[in-house]
Image (cartoon, rainbow, N blue to C red; front, side):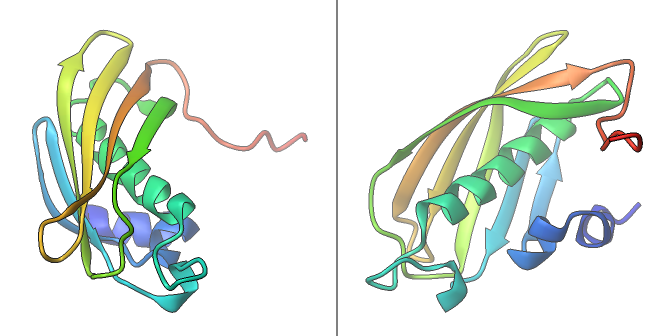
Length: 139
């Protein structure tokens, strides 16, 4: 299965951010996003929401690499913004630091193309074992 193509076709935000999966192995993910003016706030630095969204993808992919359930959702994501980011492309790495039965904790780093850390994060993903998360067709 080509996860890159699956996500580009199934997730409009993933596609909009032009996320590129660079590496996935058990407990680890590495992705990249480009610098684009559409992603910037005033001053031409990346908007914090874009950074957080990319970090959510990296953390989610790291979680997916160890997920023994059928789905997952972000339960919590805390980000510390350290530096303005404007030198793309940007690399985001997620590393699982604890996997439990229902929760996976992931550490995430967001770096510019010179390796400067712009943000660090800690997230928790909830493992779902009995249903796929989707819009209720009756709503």
